[in-house]
Image 1 (cartoon, rainbow, N blue to C red):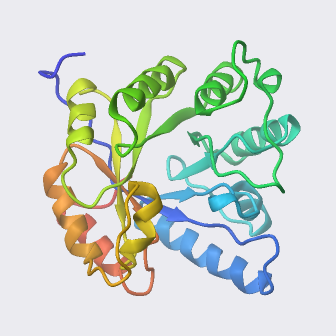
Image 2: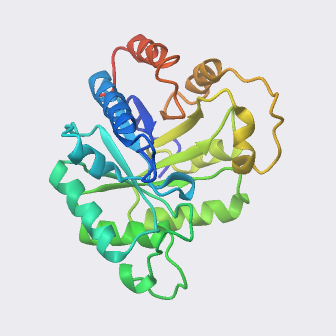
Length: 274
């Protein structure tokens, strides 16, 4: 790859959706809310990016919610997160179900653990010379046994730089074909380097849409005061200017307070994604 080549720009927004927790005390209400958000994302032409036991909290799987609620996963508009905290049987069930539903995009991540969650063993994904399964081994397994899927991976610009670039190379060698960054709130030198070194790689910049900026402390590796002021929409507009060749992944988006603005921003660019 050379920097002279034109970067492919991923279209539209990925909107993060979190399925209901399995111990919810108001499950029907939570499922109804999930369905309404999902349908709105589909109608907008954006992509619904559905998490997998986020923060290690046991939740229903994205494909389970889609099937149970009778939702239609429009082609190219659903991204299922898939982490390493599953049994081999469950892993294959998820992938087979997604194929049946017409879902073809997977975000392979190592994920957040929990004592309540099983963990894939190297033998489960035919991995050798490793003591544990990471997103690298998971990506390789999916690409080998479920080649119809496009697999994306995460990139963390807050990790030690050379170590993160070495991991990214292994992920790409395993078959990953797009990247979603951890949240950034300003121009980021490590992200800039990644874009320069991989000019043809589709990249989505994660935009933090909650005003509670302090919740990012664990991600960035330093404390952020709880009273720190933050303008998510203003920051999103800045990220669009800084990274015009990238797509945008919206985490913790406020559907009541922010979604209309997001639709307007998409319309400014000549319409939604797909």
